[in-house]
Each structure stands twice: as C-alpha cells, then as structure tokens.
Length: 168
Image (cartoon, rainbow, N blue to C red):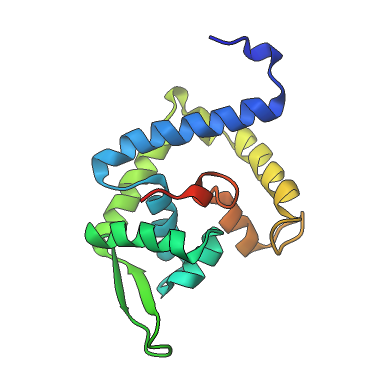
C-alpha cells in the first residue's frame, strides 16, 4: 500500500473517486446498468421526459456520448424514446418502470458501497459540494454559491469527472 500520508489532497480525492466508481460499476453490472446510466436515469426520474440533447446538457456530456448511454439503457428496457412532437428530428427520452426499479437498486448499492457508510457522511458530502461549486463555477453557468439546477447536475458527478467519459 502506498504511503497515503504523503499524497497531496488532490491525488487522494481523484484516486478515491476512481476507486468508488470502479467499485460501484462492479456492483451495478449485476443489475444491468453503468454509473453513466444511473446518472441519466436519475436526471430523467427527477426532471421528467426530455430530449437527448437536453439530458446531455444537464449531465454535462456531449449528446453523442449520451446517445451511447441511452442506446444501452433502451436495449435493456430502462428508458423509452418516442419521436418529439415539437421537433420531429429528435426523440423524447423518459425513464421506464424497469428503469425506476434499477435506479432504486442502484441507490441501495450506493448506500452500502463502503463499509460503515463513510460515503454518506454529511460532512464529506458538504466538503465535496464545496469543491464542486468552487471548481465548477468557472466551467458551468452557475456561481460559486450555486443555483439549484447547477448544484443538482454537479452533484451527479458530471463534467470532467466520471460522467464525462460515460461508458455504455
């Protein structure tokens, strides 16, 4: 084991984030979804049906990247896509009942990911939200104080983090 006492905080944070995502994905595979899929399902559950482009914007990834994630979710019955009545060139994406079940199962996985519940500590969550707000402010369209929509999207772990490289 490396001497973690010598690591700078940034290295601790990025290494911990990668390890959490790997551990989470290892458990999510059993329910047929990836970390990227959970993020997309969470937004659809909270915000309702929307276009692929809108979903990608909220999650802060390219529409093409979101398309790959949605294709996998659709093939497993977790989302449905129907032609957009307002713009026939696009589709409206919504979470299916099966997708809601997977989302609930993924929330159980997240709660139990680390023994002792260390990932659900309010103190840790508050520190992480502060980091996201401060480092995300120049990148995203909200201030360091955070708007509700900016906080929600950033709290999903999006942009330069795991969601930016969403796997299908």
